[in-house]
Image (cartoon, rainbow, N blue to C red; front, side, top):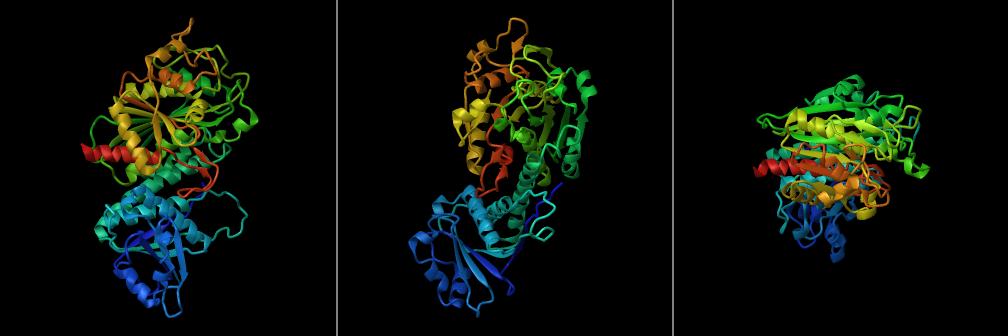
Length: 504
């Protein structure tokens, strides 16, 4: 599997004489602190003159780049604008760090010393400021590349960063968390970026080795075991593929964690052709990413385990390919699910809810979770309804929903709560089966009907359904990531889990 160089962050008390690139973290309304002022004096006031324009530091993420005089040991000094002090947040810091990483990479720099003086008006500890900038740098530096021949192939592109301005123990703890988050995000991105020739139901388990290394138990339920469990819905989805479906069961329990786990269920369709209701070519092009929900669950568990979080979490991943063939699932088939409920199938391109039906019931009935959360690139309608800004959230518990939405706002993964109402059940009535899996009006808003369908398989547990369709890939470079997989959902859920733990 391709490996992206991971930046190396080290705490230090003061700048070393060998520092070639120095980055000053600076808000708009404060003058230079003692370290930056001393460097400015050494540079005969060049830094303060470069930042004298009030607009220079007003936009968070702006890099004021100065080539230092020969008399100064540093070759380049960059002032990283953080915007107004009262507007500084963990998210704004991460985005500034991402823009800094892009700036340094554009200049061909692979080492830097970040200097933080006390900042007036910033309501965050110094360690948190430095750690969140470091997180943004890591997320922006991630790259996926499996070309064997390219300029610079084999070169060490590792970014080495020295951090100055926070006490060692506090900075170490803050870095441990953001590095664990970045580990999870980066691995989830890699899973989604892998082409369908490299990631499929036959080898998905091989790509779960980082989970095992992090102390997470991994159990794979093969097709024979799925049949024994009555998980005929996921078997039906995978029936058209030469590669039979599987379910991956992931279990992590930190020290001192409660007995009752949080359950996370992920849709893992490694390629979705639409089945017999085949997609158009332009719709099919990005369908290697239809396992973004499963990848996010993997990333979340890595993030929790690598920071030794004292939580109890299980993951259930439904892994399949949705392909057309003589053995494929057909419209108007009736499938008996693991819950015992029968489902009449209509659109074979609505395969995700069939997979989730079995996996939700399995998670609820086997693990007795306190909450179930599922993530799925599920419906085109949520994309049409919410556009590119928000993902959809449905929940049986408004308190949990509100906390998740707040967690998403903090990390930049935004969700909008949509209705989960019994009125939608009317559109799922079937004359032949317990339930039909798609609303009768194919042009009606499908996302609420999909949520209404899934609720039937949650065994009345507190439940949140996250429809992240359209959020799994970015079509251009952004401050916190390059074009390609986003790992949307990992950071929000990590923040939700950790904030809930500290609040209790």
